[in-house]
Image 1 (tube, rainbow, N blue to C red):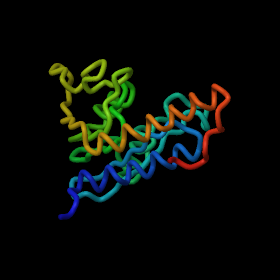
Image 2: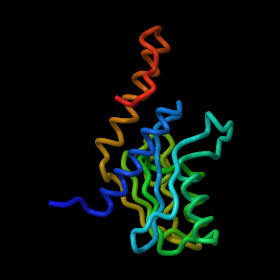
Image 3: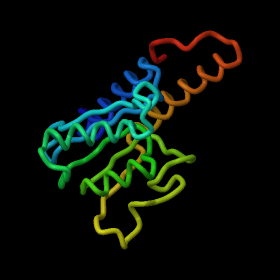
Length: 166
């Protein structure tokens, strides 16, 4: 049995998250595709290396997709991300007029799709974006848990962080 397009694109986002880890960033990856499933933009977390608090994976992917589309709006597009988006990223997605956001792991600390806030459910906003969570949630969550577990071990004097995800 073949994987659904959502699973295939989330696997690509996971590969980007692994690249973020190798680059010393929190492992989050994102992919934007058009209604036909063609990838318009990709992104991996870059806030640490770029010294930019807005350099989240979703923002990187949105910027690339908007450049590819030649428009700051992406009607009909879907963004896949390994972690539930924060308020900043969800706000950008709403402004981009995405049709859909698909995320992997929930974020009970900063998630803005039900984790802490639920921005997409606010009916008075001028655009509504459908949100679906839990695609490859186990894999997405385990990647993040492994990253932070190794960071804690390194802080306690354990082995240094590997340059490769486990």
